[in-house]
Image 1: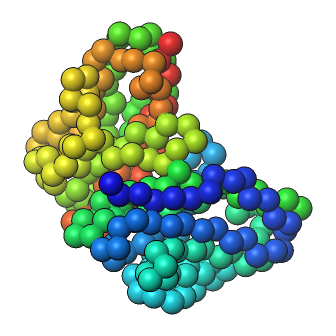
Image 2: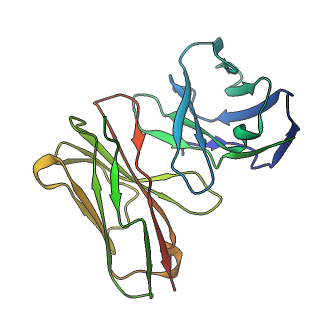
Length: 111
Length: 112
């Protein structure tokens, strides 16, 4: 059974702080890892993908992958109220391109 | 580039009625997905098409759900008869083969 686990939150951070979102997964064969952002009432949009251990930075977003510990994180620096959304971790099982989604973590950035 | 189109955006029906959703993927995208997203959960894959063939429908409740993708472009998802627990957002996504998915706006279904 493929499992992708996320804390549903909400995670509340002040504007300008670093928001840290975490995801653990069960399939050691997974090779690719995705973070989607979903605003309330909207559809998911891909914001980050990571394929190898370590960090990947894109603007204010940093994805961190640790395959040995089977977790992937998303850091959002200088958080803005516009970052308030649900962040979904999505991980295909080994050999598949179809991601299994976590339940998502709700992030609230307050002014 | 036009995105994934879905209709209707909202639908309210009574249990035991039938309903159909329509999806038009991004032009040139061979792969099409239907997801069900229940409130507070992540999207769950119902069915994946590659052109007009089914790749994965292992999580589709086949006693009441059906989907087709005639001619390998547009797709319809049907529920007959609907149950209360089918209330959810139904998301269509498309992608080039083995590549990133792009989601449509979704259809919010309420079953009373």
